[in-house]
Image (tube, rainbow, N blue to C red; front, side):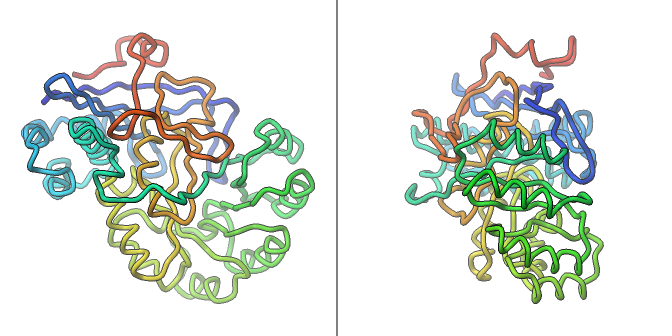
Length: 356
């Protein structure tokens, strides 16, 4: 069993702004797991907010070398090996996410079936994905909407002094469904007031309006008083967070890198359903490798936000495609992503693109 890591710098189509940062490129680590000539792929991005960068992630993955042979055993699923993986990386969920995704992809390819099929899921009536419009001037945000016209759902990043003006103007240009993500940028009372206007504008839900450190009283007040559902994102990072979110949120947004892989994501989504919560999977700005992995969870979702690769100007990968919201699976087993080895150098820093 061989593991190879590729450090990539992915260029964005436009500068991407949320309430706490803006980026024009995304640093991403792609992991290739290979056995007997068959390769599986996983991906995780750098993220300063959560404290994960290339060097720390790679250092954690180097600790998994003694575990790798277990992934070659056809009788051992990545689902069973995940506790050992988390122990090996000493709790580094970003590192675990890349290897766990690659292991599920490799297993599906060796079995000759899609990963979602390996989990016993049924690919019927899966939800469309939204397309995200980052924070900018109102005119620029309208321009981005028109540039990506025809999507069935748009997720709008907010957290400015003009949030309601932005949403009112965007509504003039489309009848598509809206979702809002404030990325911890609002107060409870501000969110309650905004929710009434947003409901009239056809917004389905608000994602993580309050900071992680907001009081339980504020979160409970918002849960009771909001005119539309509130979905946890930054407050729902790992498996144990789902139950903690249940008194304060109507649903959870699970992200593969934050929870530690596809294995814990499956558990979190099942738990959320058991608790009567709405389910969603989101993404970072990332290549088709990460999107293809996350897309395997679609049969378990009420909402999907898998537009990460659509936000890129270019990438060295292919796989699951999102056509104006509709998710299109490739005709390949596993998660379905492939790397174009001839183009990897275009997205790598000289001398820093490959880690054996």
